[in-house]
Image (tube, rainbow, N blue to C red; front, side, top):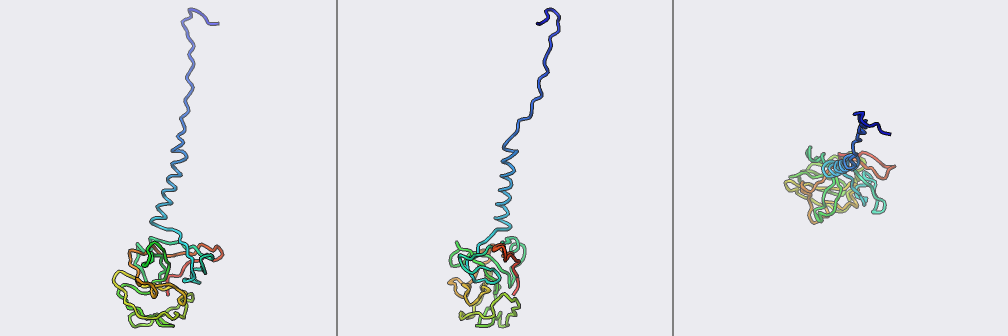
Length: 199
């Protein structure tokens, strides 16, 4: 029952409004930022690469397309520092740039590289190769090649079977086609390792 003429009207205090949850900024925005960071890392810093052949065995423990390996490619390593002899790099194959290859840098720009069955010579001087993972027998594909400016001569560590600069139509890899340094083997998991960057 309401009192008449009292002059006092009871007023309810409005309930404090809860701030509306913004689902976009609360949930989707962090996900989008995370995806953007991951894509940027993959594009400019690191990315995985599948190795489907034995040309770098045992440095990279792949033996076939069925028994493949994965490596982590450090893109900054070849952008911030000069590419050096012995470095293992991932690059676009000069004969078909849609394919990625991984090999070890042997010849630098301006070098004359001679490969015999059991030795490599750089500018007439025998290359000392102490890395135990590099084959001591180079196979039957031998010869001498002059590396053009801005390009590199590549050999696989498993040289008797490696499809490398000795066999390609376009023998040399331009600097612009090098993606980055192959730093780590991450698969198979039981053979995870750091990849040696020296001969």
